[in-house]
Image 1 (tube, rainbow, N blue to C red):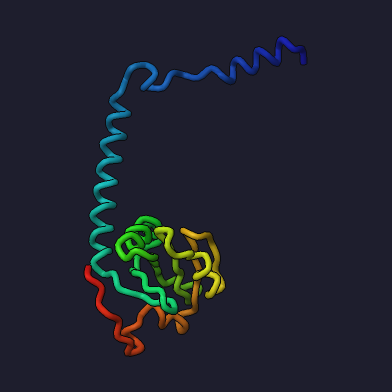
Image 2 (image 1 turned 90 degrees about the horizontal axis):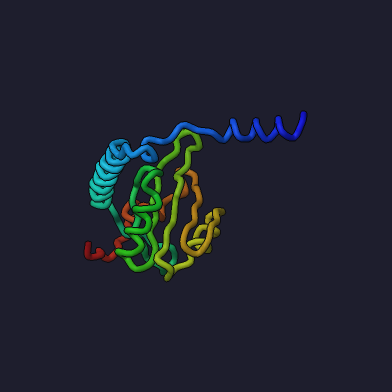
Length: 155
């Protein structure tokens, strides 16, 4: 293959039809922005509803906030919980195939959640971590189920 032919092929491959935005049609961009705002608002409303079910949870002498929530909300809700409590937030959900609770931890920086997760065979870093526990080993998530009375946190 001659060098001229290879250069010609590269030029042909790089030629693209102009995007709607490049051609001055901003309607697609406005539509995407509008849909994005609607999705953000819907996500905010769902998160607010989920937050109503939060509860305190203890890992040793460290008290955080927990909530049963879909995995898609783990990061946002975990951060909201950690900022509310001033320590850490944990979101959890049950995985039937594994017969286990999957837990996601987030911290505002005052608690190293990576170390907390390691206690349960998980891992992560100072601000984000995770672990899983079998269904019979999760009493710490539900302190009321063991008769433990936690001091009610002002919500």
